[in-house]
Structure formats: C-alpha cells, structure tokens
Length: 105
Length: 147
Image (cartoon, rainbow over all chains, first blue to last red; front, side):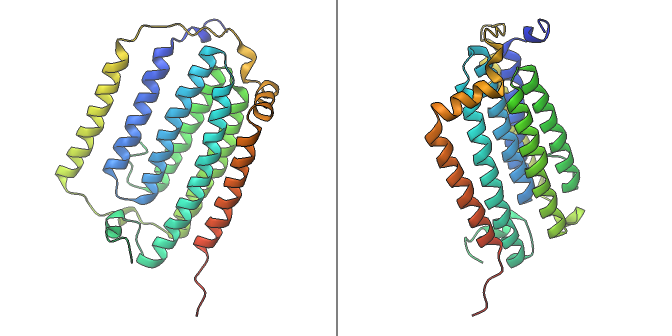
C-alpha cells in the first residue's frame, strides 16, 4: 500500500485538469445535446476526483460527503435534462442545439 | 474518445470506461464507499439512462450537421488554451506527497457517521431534490394532454 499512496497530489490535480478540459472541449465542439450532457458529466467527475483527492490528503471525511451530494445533484440534473431533451426531440425532431436559438418552438 | 467519436453510442461506452477508471482512482484513494456509489450511480443508472434515451430517439450516425471548420478550430484552441493555463498554474505548485494519516476515513461507517450526524439536514434536502426531479422529469416527458 505504501507504493500506491506515494502518488503526489499534483498528479491528481493534473488528471482532473485534463478531464475538465476534455469536457470543456466537448461542450464547445459538439452540437448534439446528448453529448454535451455527457461532457458536463465529465466535468463534474473531474471536480469530484479532485475533491476526493484533497479529502484523502487532509484526512477529512467532509469532502467525500460533499462528493456524495454532488452525485445526487448530478443524477437529478441528468434526469431533468434528458426529459427536456426528449421533449425537444418530440417537438423539433432533432437534438441539434442550433435549432433552439429562439427560446420557443 | 467521448468527444471525437461520431456515433453517440460509442461515446457513451467510452464514458462508461472513463467512469470505471475514476472509480479505480477512488479505490486508490481509500474511498471505498464512494467508489461503489460511483459505479452504481454513474455506470449503472446515468449511463443506462443515456443509452435508453439514445435508443429511444434513434439517432443516426450522420444526424449531426457538420460544423464549420473555424468553429472547430476555435473550440479546440480555446479548450487547449484553458488546459495550458491550468497546467501552467499548477505545474509550479510544490509537490506534496500524499500523506494519508487517516486511511480509514473513506469507509462506510465513518462516512455514515459524518453524513447522518453533521450533514443530516442537507441529506434530507437532497432527498427532496431527487423527489422533485423525479416528478419533474415525468411531467416533462409526458405527452401533452389533448385539449
């Protein structure tokens, strides 16, 4: 276990920066709303990973409880977002976000 | 892989792979409870929801319109610049070795003590949030009543 715990904290910071940037790039690049949702999930997970890393570093369990709450909020967000997406697909027959530039159908 | 695959189903599968990798990182950080919850919630529930919506909507591979080239370049450029800035910011941070002075903090019993002792009210509020999200999702995706 000693070899596993010798990973410095900076590597976790770099990994979550990488994940977050991939998520931002995906939101900027893609037009499909489902993939944009997935990239938002990716960004949330980058933050979660960083929070667990700092929580383990400080020996404080509150960070992990907070990650638990973030997971609950993410689940709620995905449920509502996907239902909005289904309604949008039913009304406009596409999932392209470029069609939604008028805020009404 | 999540971003650049044309087929959205492949994208979902790569995202599942990423989530399992993150769960492995949680295990390495001695957060066993969070690793299990992460696998159950993300890889189990959310990804199944995504796949279900993809199959319900029956999206084709070429359903996505081709973007203009300069938009793609601008997206890659701004994402890369963000990554470069953040990496350069944290690159010079002093390297601290991970000292886990309390490795038992991520176990279910200790997390439960914190969750139901100090954070009992936010826990109840999040349950109300999940309930309202469930009702809202059903209301939104229900077909409109014919008048």
